[in-house]
Image (cartoon, rainbow, N blue to C red; front, side):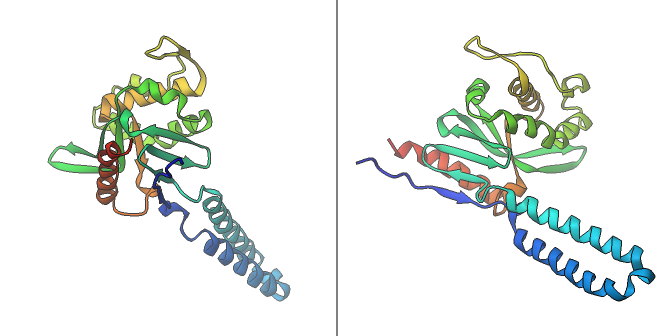
Length: 225
């Protein structure tokens, strides 16, 4: 009989209050609709503004609601990151280091709101990330690139999006969004020392606490055959 592996499921902070926001938007809309019956002429600009605000609140709540229920799933085999644009999966054995990202600017120590993952071989990621997510992460991680450039950790020319083919260690040539993402990950590794980045908004606890959890899971994975 196949043994069922334990799984730790993580809910993202960004998913919180989705239904509440949509409910608030509906209540505001209904209340404004009732009010506007007798006061449209006097307050039509204000009423339109309230309707638009309610729409923004509803769309924000809907976007949160459409996110995957769990942003991360950890088991003795590896880690799975889930996003509404796709997912990536990495085995613990493919990871060299997991750490908080701390940089120094002058006399100031800066902790970035991410957990960094350094892979043993970046090429292994090619088959373990969906192309849509790869394309999306390039845009979501622009603040990391901008920070690296501002701190002179990355030359401006290397910060630009590369559409060149990417050659895997196996000799296979990748093109398209996967190639662009692997070039992007290579540049961030050169600047910050990591290939993958888990944002603070994707976890359910303090960064330091979650980093410790990931490290413990990676060490404990050797106990499972």
